[in-house]
Image 1 (tube, rainbow, N blue to C red):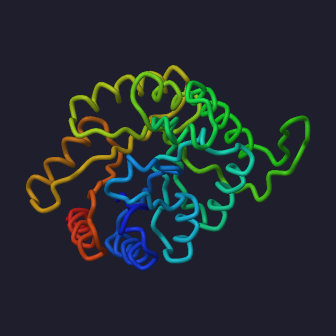
Image 2 (tube, helix red, strand yellow):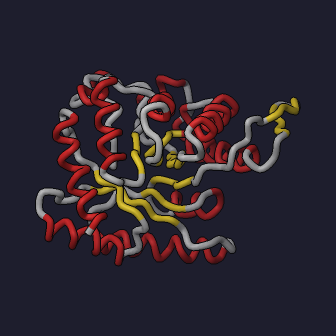
Amino acid sequence: MALRTQGPESTRETIVECARAAEDAGLDALWVPDHIAIPPDEAEGSGGRYLDPLGMLLFLTGHTRRIGLATGALILPYRPIVPTAKLIATLQELSGGRLQLGVGAGWMKPEFRAVGVDYARRGAITDETLEFLNRSFAEDVGETHGQPWLFLPRPPRPPILVGGGAPHALERAARYGDGWLPMEREPDRLRAGVSELRQRFAEAGKPEPRVEVYTGLPVGERARLEDAVSEMGEAGATGIIHFAGRYGDASTYRTHVEALGELLES
């Protein structure tokens, strides 16, 4: 289930209530988006109010026990490599290994200007960060700018799912990650991407990729909900992340997670 970090839904009380409702319903994970510097002309629906995704997930480690905690997707070029790796490791450690790291290269040019990062280098920076994360989680001693340093604690690396479209996201996932994080409503379009992704993973000698799909499900109609989930599974999705839109309050959010929980039980 997607959990909003923005707008009126991002109060402390609403976040906690929504997260606990999703956990009680038996859902696998909560996925949070990432915006860091929304320009005024892009603030409709949020008022420009956004919580940091890693900070929000750290907060939720203390208010949940079982449910996975996931970024969907963390925009890597916005953040310096070493502090970001340390924060990811801290979250993985304190959550008891519940982190799933959805990542992306980003698309909103004003945010890149705000953080002083060259938009044209976003892909290269993303690759550099992913290479660094893989290396850091593989050994205790890292090195940056000629200085060795200890990457401790060093919990197991969280699964890395790469967001975005073909061909760049699929190539990046095969090189650095464990799967793909697309946004898709049409099973046929998903099927084509999954086929290419599986081929790339096979060529890289990697196991079958995970495919976690962001989509909107018809939670109010049981038959249509079952069909939608089945069609996405047949198209190659290994998981579905339901995006409920602007649900407004925890009560509305609860109706969504309970419908999904009932489907899981059937």
